[in-house]
Amino acid sequence: MCGINGFFNYSGSSLTESVRLLEAMNNRIAHRGPDDTGIWCSEDRKIYLGHQRLSILDLSEAGHQPMRSTRGSVVVFNGEIYNYPLLKNQLKDVSFFSQTDTEVLLYLYERHGVKLLEQLNGMFAFALWDPEKEELLLARDRVGIKPLYYTLQGGVLSFSSEIKSLLELPWVEAKLDEEALYHFLTYNKLTPPYTMFKGIHKVKPGHYLIIGKGGVKKYEPFWEVSLSNLDSTNEQAIQEQLLHELRMSVNRRMLSDVDVGAFLSGGVDSSAIVALMREYHDGPIKTFSIGFKDAPDYDELSIAKRVSRRYGTQHYETVVSAEDIREFLPRVVDIFDEPLADSTSIPIYFLSKQASEEGAKVVLTGDGSDELFCGYRAWAKYARLYPYYRAYNHIPPPVKKLVANIYGTIGNTTPTYEILQRAAKGQEFFWGGARGFKESTKRQFLSPHYQAQTKSMTSYETMLDYRESFEMLYKKERKKSDVDWMCFLGVKNIIPNFYMYRADRLGMSQSIELRVPFLDHNLVNYALSIPGPMKVAGNEPKSVLKSALEPILSNDILYRKKMGFCVPLREWAGDIMLDYLDTNLSSFCNDTGLFNEQALSRYVTLARSGNTNVTATLWNMYFLITWVRRWFS
Image (tube, rainbow, N blue to C red; front, side, top):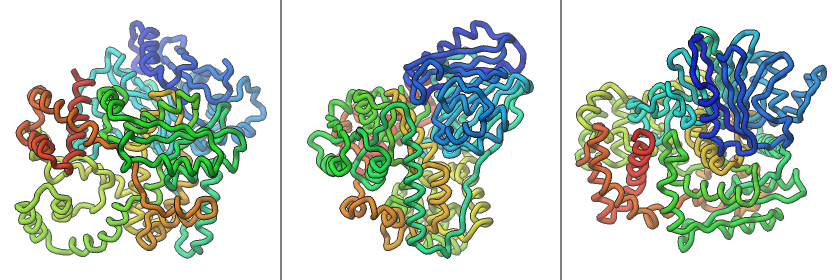
């Protein structure tokens, strides 16, 4: 796990102080790789590559990057290729000087070109310079576990693992993208190509770019979900194959020259990961759990401890206090240079800090399972309601619009009103992770200028490409269900743009590598092939996964009520957020000219009166204001 930077002057014009700028980019993301730093530039001074290394495989100097082949190709690489020992066997004629996956990647490119991407099993983002073609290849892994940003300005392509590094370049301006902001208000996250910075884009998961003398020559996908038709397959056989795929994935992710640990909440997913780690490793395994002082409703430490004892791990606990959270709140926007308004970032930060302090460089997590297997009770509720929503949509549009408008006079801030508005506009029922302000009401607090500017926009637009891809995929492969749509959207949108972004930034802020066994692309393909009804059988979220895990986990772990990964935000930080909003809301609205202060202040008034239903909205407002102030002041 590392950080990569660079720029390619494809227009041929000269750049001044290029080495100094590249060093500044590296320094800005030194937390991603504190073990080593490196820079390289071509003889003609057109291509500059930088790297910060977190040493995981081959801890010697042989793993230094940028890494160059005997033919002159140069790569900077972030991530891990878990099947690199197998791929190395294809290259018996190569004399390797290291035991790294980076070197295998380099020579695989020289053997296969961009086709090498189809062979990689892992998480990765890399930039590779081909001196013969005079082309730069940028690529990002299939599920978007590793980040990759780029910008094209003034005949120069610049790229990095984090936006903050790009902002070190004098030709890259920090300018708010108001279209991206409009969508962020609905989702609390951003989908590619959007970032909150105009002109800075993120590479889509499973895509690559080739940049030559004239700029971008190709921007194409190298992967799409591959489905198997399991409609007539025995459910017992599906469960056995599912457990096998998870076993293989965990085994691959034990590949490391440093110790491998795990985050352990005591829930189904993290407990399964720890159980399977123990199957493949008889040495020490460090596990990390978090609790909250004097907040038992949020605490799972006793359950995690029980799982730890069963599998003989070296277990570490962190108990976070209200004061810890108060001290952390102002720092969260430094970590997220692309905004992510998610309060569960707080416990993940403290878990990552704990792991780093205990010397763990590699940590496995259970992320991705809930999206693959419909693990949220809210999603199961969507699945039950979908047939009624579809039936309601047969009503003539004018009637649906009238019903929505009438209901709006009763309560236009309720989820029901949002659903009626979606139906009236002929939109999809499930948007997936729309955790921000309701699309049906957010215009109420936009300024007249911003309302006019975004008059023709709807954040539903960001769903359409995913829905079209889903329809094409399932049309070719097998019949589809509503659960299939939710899980597909989870993999394509929510996982990379929310959970993987969150994991990367928080883990890297503490210089640790987070690995996600549930997101092995073979497991993803198989999970999305499982018929949706199997995932919510008997109204039990991720039913098929739980049944598959019965041979390795006890029922009290598998079938206890899901607590969720939450923090006592209102109890501990409510006053901080309210005081901040009281002080800064007015100036923020005036400075940006984008929001109606009076409309937003109503949420503050509701919170002051004791309304706990607006806590999430309060957090969204607090985060947005502090984030904009941090990055655009």
